[in-house]
Length: 383
Image (cartoon, helix red, strand yellow):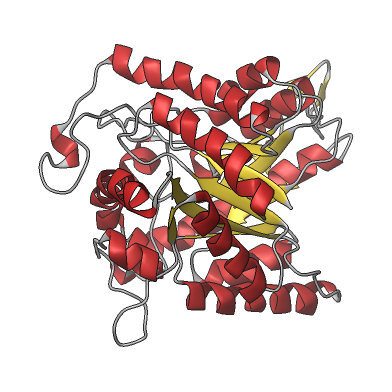
């Protein structure tokens, strides 16, 4: 089983938890945010030392509130690659519609080659209007009807951009003509002629994997149809098991081959480990509540199960007890956390790709490093 850790890259907070302050009332200094970036490099080194296989970053922009302060995971990943030797490096996720696709392709290929083939290409469509619309994109959501047109355009742009990236990666020369992108544009003069094709420099010198979040019925079909890996996070365990199986069915229908148990599917679980059950719960509560105070208004809790058996309404701010009952968070001793992960392995028919989210908004980086070390030394050996 390939095991990774995923970090938001948050600023250390002394007032994390439910209630005040509201997120938008916080404003951190450039020095505080840069300290978080430097400590994130430390976390990558700690993860490798702890025996983890993958270090996942994220891409977000303009977050003065301090939750996710690393805007370019690939540039950061190139630096981390120089400080490590073995661990793979990727982003959950690079937000494709916010990039020029050829710049994204160049940057990933550069990081991937510099790392000796340790790059993983995580791709997403985006969720935050503040970021997307300031960077030339739009976002909507499948279950938000008043944003249906923005969602449609976003999906079109994402799909074409990925076609461009793959064409650039896979061919010595390439051209592309689509609705949103045309490469090369017609009539570019060059040395007495016109440009007919382009060549990406550099291209990946090593094999690479592509992963995308599976968060809606359309992506549940789209990702396996493309042949990529699907990432499952913040979903009630019953909903997760259903989508996990359906992902495999869609893949087999499209490609004529049944997936092995756990193949091309990644489970992401939020975890907190302590010496006792009670200490773990006490240590996790403020970070859990801050996590949902931040993300609940964006509708991220719609993967939870409501009392009527259907999805929770967007905007739910769950308690820690609800999150544990939904099996979205696993909190406890090393033995309890290992048992919870093993239960998922049994219910899903096997795990090949497991990613753990060990650091909650507001946590210090000393605590985050301790959590990563505990996972490597005390939890993973029990699986």
